[in-house]
View 1 (cartoon, protein in one colour):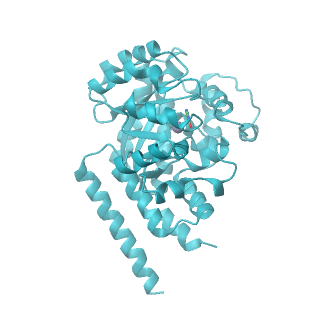
View 2 (spheres, helix red, strand yellow; view 1 turned 45 degrees about the vertical axis):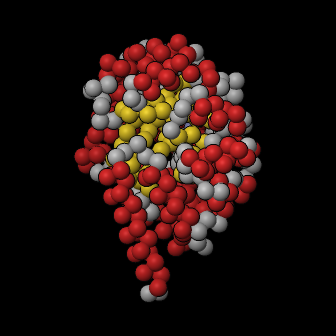
View 3 (cartoon, protein in one colour; view 1 turned 180 degrees about the vertical axis):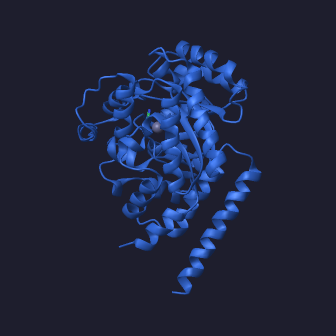
Length: 349
Ligand code: HPA
Ligand code: ZN
């Protein structure tokens, strides 16, 4: 059933704008790196790891996600992690990725911040050269830590800016949302904006719509990561539609972390039909059961999205990317050609 729509989704050119690279750590690689680095994991097998991925909320996931990330120690580890993601993204017809990384998860363990940057960047540069995958990096501050710690992370990263100028273009905010509102990071985000870096923040995943409003008004973010709870505030919905501030929505993540009980309850279609710039993303695909195409297919089936809506989601993803308009126009043309070819194929059937 729906084979032709699934094929249409698989071939659709798309951009991924909400992907935590540490969340693409598959259990097989986690085990291999644990062995290589002499790290003891609290699991006996890959199957046991997968069985542990039954989450009740965001924090229950974060506990395992930060524990898993402890196997990442060398530049080569970050390179292999990122290369594995790049290959899967290419297979899903992802043309462009803006990936999140969490330096604080690694620097607290004594890993140098340049080790993190270098391994990720080496893979992204190779993926660009070998596969034509376009990419950028967004450094995230962990919001359960203090603003001073975010400032220290920014200070540690800034000397690397020239070395990674082709990739590092922005800063985000992730980790446990409730109790860590955007206001906590007002000063550091002001500094980041002064530096000419792009700014985004997770908001309205588990937190209330007021957190989305604060991310916009106080942090002055250019995109909202998740943002699904914005629907509870009519004025905010109107603002998001009018401003076209993008939401990077992650359907399988929302299901696994119980933001929604079932994908059929997900508000992605309502947000899209209300005229918001909604995009589909995978968040932490190794933990939530699927990469980009799995997210697209699952939500398309659950909400009966039309081909036109799927193309709109892909168009939104390119439009919301932090790349020059000249590049967006190339992707829009590719999308138009893809849609036209699919329509012609239908008519000749
Ligand atoms: N929310 C907040 N922090 C995160 C997430 C998320 O979905 N994934 C990785 N860190
Ligand atoms: Zn996220």
